[in-house]
Image (tube, rainbow, N blue to C red; front, top):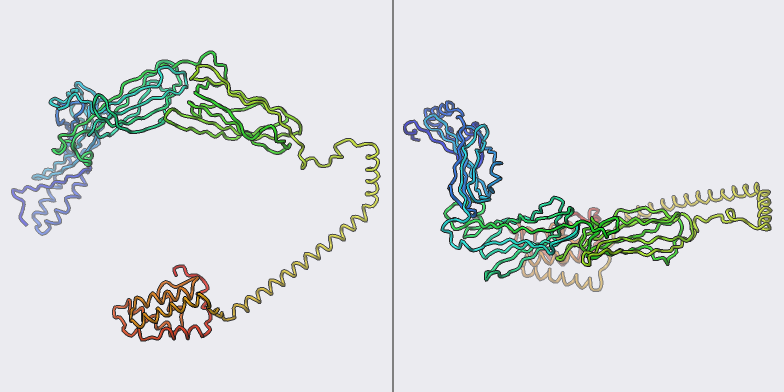
Length: 613
């Protein structure tokens, strides 16, 4: 290996991450190991690394161009020299610029005993407005870069098709005046010219904070405008203003890209030679105004409900079915409204007469968005329990609401109900004790009570005697159960010791077995090992239908010794490196017949189905 000329050693590491001084020394160790064969050179490198210490940090900034347009991004490069980590504060750029991408690199050099560490960060900036934009000093650790200026014009000079609108964002409202909490349909349309690829589209922003927006519908279609073809993205929002006054909606910004760049260019440097024809396309929507009106004085309800349609229905009580005292009944009152959210619908709590208790359930809310607006529903369930029988009157339920189509108040109503509560037969015990009795009946009952009381002791003795035979009956039943359990244990033990006799196969099963044996005999006659294996497994499928073996090894374990030798010889001929040639000399049909004629006792392991047959 040649020594470095003029005592100069140059070592460069270029990476996308920040490293400290210790990392630089660590990365230089492979070079020291490669130069270990030359002690003088290795000693020189080690001395240079030890002498070269952390340098004083110096931060700089530069722009790729001092002039640009709203459609053309620029590159801002931040660089710091020394041991300072690259952690800049970029908050000063948010006001006038949008950061589209970033990349970082690091360079560490050792030249003539002096270490030079440089770290840089490249930012792709897109201006947000025209004019002279100031890039303030950016702090990088304890250092700061110098301030820069950038001149931004509305359109890049020499740009072809400068007057062509590549993207248009439009906002519109279905009405210019609306009441507080009334639904207003806000429509956003994005027109994209051919060749424009969308990157981002912001939602419209209302000027008042007390405004709710919900996306209802989105669709895409093609359209023409001023003789040009566009691809249109349409979004419809439900807008609810909770504060009166003048409301402005705007700020829907679109950013796209046009040109001949590739898909992967969006993640790389946008200033490479392959991307010179690409440029940024941006568009911002118009602003629309809505006059929010206060609640009209003609409305008399407790809860303001502006809607296109509102209905109230109930389920659970029809006024015809008699009810039982003490048993619960669920009554459900449902409110449906077009043009309102479910959260805007009120809780229905009807007044109930004395004698009926109610236990409310958790309400069920549901919203159904559609192209023409939102439909909300609220279901209020309450459990009713009548404590006393009788006839009760449930009052009518009325819900005032404001019809936004006719601009007047209407009332959704549930009519009053008359319900009849019947006595509970389970609770109506001992009616004679609670109701007054005639004198003759009362005298007869008193005589009966005296007779019963005079014969009470003999009855008690008789009851005790009746209970004794129940004790003997349970004792005999317990002894009989114990004896039956002993007999069943003895029978199972004797049954398990008997050899299992194979049932004779007849009918269609026997015919299938004979066909399988014929295929097996033919395969052995043709010396076809693959056909013999298939025939063996087909015969095993008929032999053990509930748990057939799926390979020859398992089949051999279930057969006697003679048949197992024939099966193992076939398996060695199929899979062994030194194949056997005498596997076809076995008379397998005769061996199988001998095995079936001999009574075979079931093997204990075969009583359980293996996990992997």
